[in-house]
Length: 461
Image (cartoon, rainbow, N blue to C red; front, top):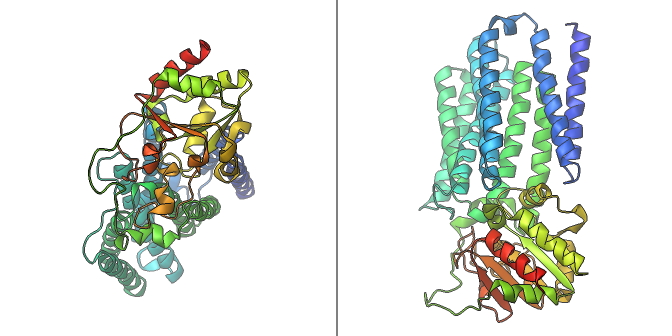
């Protein structure tokens, strides 16, 4: 393939990546953006087979094709079998694999270049190894937290900040040694220390803040890919990695702002925060529970209803049922809106994706800043599987892990209905005082079954 044609096709792939990001900025165009990005990635992969500076790529064609086939099988099976509730874990793993792959490629390329590597190439290699390994091990920890294979609470230990600082110092010193003196052993030590730092980096993060860390690690992976593109002298990797790194960084800042805290406080605040429980006495407290008929009557005589979805909605796979309920209310002349918190669920945009799957009209999805002023005029707020994003502890309990996070002010509505399986706290592990408010009614049970009963009762009114 002629070099000019190769560069033009590479530019076309880069344009696809830009258009993909643009499409992903809105739920309405997200599917199209995803498809455009997939086309760009496919084009970027295919053109490599038709152009190589010295023909080396074709010398290992069977291995390359086998790796691509394996990746296609794993990706296809995972995409089809993984439930929506497990999508954040899948994103975390895929993100980590990207960072780890870039780090491995950089190590192999460094070992191949040996003494021929320039100082700039060695620096780019060290950057790729450090950030890629941090992204890989950190993403594994986020996966374990999301999958609840380990505690979702912040993991802190004595002198934790000092240990993290010393590990980071070891990473930088070993990296500097490689730049100054070279050597494969110091590079591997640097990689191992980076993996350890990635684990220590994520352990202090509590469950409510995991979406921010996923976004940050995604930005890390993008920067890693961009640096590996410099090592491999591949412009397309630099462009793609820079786009991911930049967009991930912007999203991380927006997510941290939505949580009402600094990024440093999100990552390391657990070392100084004093955990408090909303009910330290351990005594059983009365709550007001109701039936599906009670909830249906409240909804039937409302003029405005707000639905607040959370991770429990995804667990119950109740998005289609909640849309059926919303359509029924709308047909009765009731104003219905969905209150979307920026960090609802367990990854950025989780609730938007879930509701889009049920073809919920986009105009009914209202962001937190827009819907909060309307709650005083709202007759009923129906909370389906959400807890932390409506928890008043974010405003009233300075020792709470979510303190400072902007929340949906559902307590200002005339009536609040919680659909819950039990009185178990949310992902942040803290109790919600709103559950004990006199205006709150709890409907216990599986969200999908409860909503189905409410729909049936509402049809009979």
